[in-house]
Image (cartoon, rainbow, N blue to C red; front, side, top):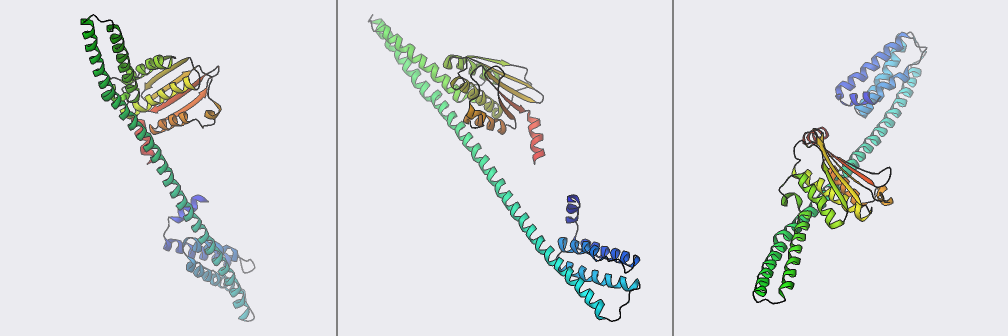
Length: 356
């Protein structure tokens, strides 16, 4: 039924009017063939409905009049006779009045339905616009956070690191002067220089964590290996990275999102899951990349399992921005396994073309 409705909506009004007249003629011919004993007025309603619903009310009135005329004419042609003219006229008037009531009711129903469809379309457009706006704001917030992290990373690397490096050089110079005079404070000066150099290395590590992709010119796997090393050093967790076969390197946007997902997952595993071991694995093929982070912690907390965990929502949103999927599940023994699957660039373009 729905298929026929869609087809009829594509027809022109003259074609629909002609179809209604044809239906009246066919029903009138059947009415004539079956004789005047059988009542066929109900079948004329199909033509009336078609005219009112798909053309307009005036067409419905016109088809109603033709239906009455066809009914009366077929009965006369079939041999029905009246003793006066009032009886057929009265019957025709009653039948026409009945059809007019149907026309009014159908027109009102059509108006209500089209008004409802219009409101549904309007509300759908508003919801679609609201969803797009919310997604745009989420993307903008995420990008703003990324830019801010990158700015802080650059400031740490180009500003604080350079300042600490200058301080280390000054400390070296002071240490040499104290050593030339054989003063006992030379040891303290050397210790101070060591602390400054440790601060430089720590600052560089923090800068690379905040801004890894552009500041680290190597491959994505090198960034993940350094991330695992930093986790072992800073978070005191046994973190290992394993890389399977990769067919080429992803673009900078995908690489950055994958790095951030792994970074967030490792941090959550240690802080919330109390994990002692975290395994990060990156594999790839013609269809795309698969990033897996598994730990031996206490597992997903209750709020995270209900979808209320902020970290999981951010990771899932990053996966969605890459056109991929994200899944978090509790392992059979203990711990959590996070999986992010990202299709290849060609697959993402094909999916985007299909959506559009």
